Length: 101
Image (cartoon, rainbow, N blue to C red; front, side, top):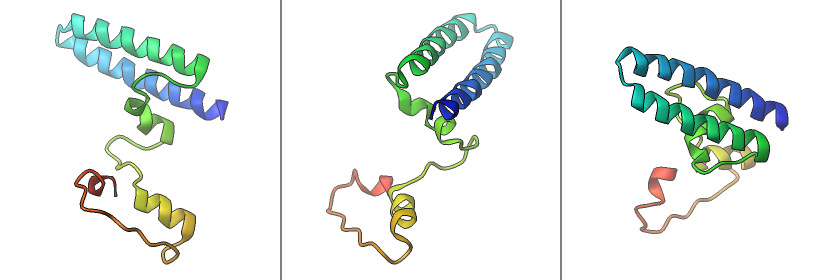
């Protein structure tokens, strides 16, 4: 929903201001300028189209998670969708799949 997206953008902007203050206090103005430019461009695209490259970087804000809180996993999704005993997960030997669980 549009309201959820706007709320996420506001949280991203608030975190951006915090990070800019830290970078500027460390006299790292070049990094602060790059971060601000890239983030503001992303926010503009998100507001206009609902998407930007690297959208996963903002997933915490979009999902409403707190800083440091673990993201949802496939097991969380399956448990919510089918209950604790209504699903079976079969995993092949791929090492890529396991961290996503």
